[in-house]
Image (cartoon, rainbow, N blue to C red; front, side):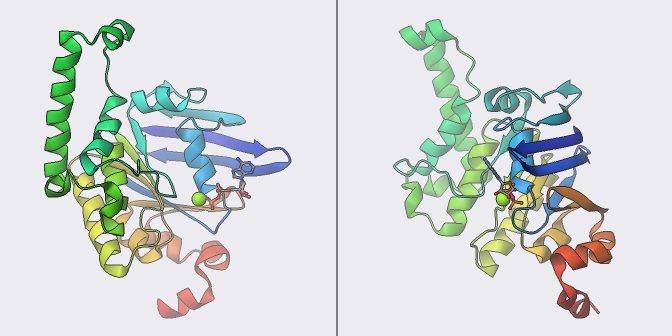
Length: 256
Ligand code: ADP
Ligand code: MG
């Protein structure tokens, strides 16, 4: 589904992503882990068209997306969330999700200017789809609540739902559990499992190692921009380079 080959991202003298290749199969939950500054978010940005790869190729469903901007990438079927919450603070739950839907509206400039009947029908349809999505993810009862009034865990979930509004095939989540308490993290884990089982392929950056180990089919480990390991949870957690760079020696002890 996603085929990133020898990707570099450079900022002046700094190589933030250093020759990373990463392949994601449809239906997979694929996680990227690594210490702060390892280049995880920068890799996400390169895939989603926010900053360009300096070198390398990124293909999605066979199409070269390396030079696409973020709107073009979104239209190919890639949705994403950001490391820090980026909800529209003054809007309700439903309005936030509707904004996600609007990225997919296809009515052209003419319809936008004159508010044609076909555009109104499209708006109506989007509203219905939005409410159906909110029902599916158990946020329907909170649809008219201002998003900032939601508990923290639900705010982070809403970000994911907004990214799902464009009906992506691949959903990229940048540290979705950051700042969550154990209960919220567990709920998020179940939510990710559910949307994955409904057919969404997931690429996940996450610091909660326990969550990653129990969720991900494949784990890629980055350190200083470069890939140092890749494999199943079993393979990665017994890898000496990964323990050294990220998990720490105490991790090996606790795992026996
Ligand atoms: P991670 O998400 O793994 O914590 P990042 O991808 O955010 O790491 O950052 C990787 C490196 O790239 C860091 O050294 C960071 O300071 C640097 N970096 C990220 N974005 C930029 C930017 N826009 N300009 C310059 N340096 C950046
Ligand atoms: Mg990051």
